[in-house]
Image 1 (cartoon, one colour):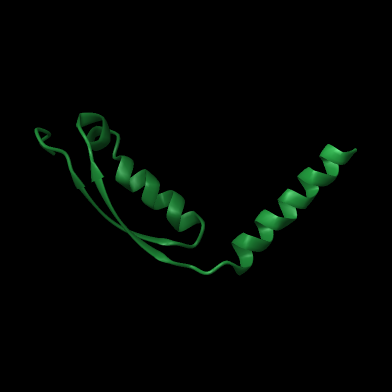
Image 2 (image 1 turned 120 degrees about the vertical axis):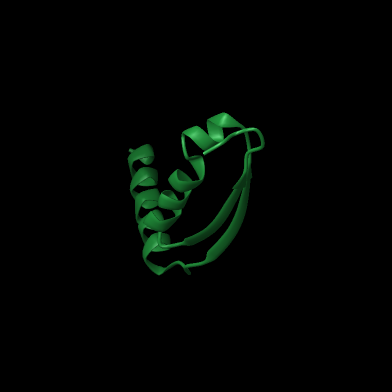
Length: 67
């Protein structure tokens, strides 16, 4: 029973933080190799940030990889 109450409390706390949290803009530089570039990791992380209402300004440096 205690676990259920904690889970319900955690759910409401996370909903509250998403709804009333401050939106912010983060700047990120991705350093990587072909795995970073081929799978477009920066865009995936940007989509996750946008889904929470945050903005992400990013650039990537992947030496040796041509796009």
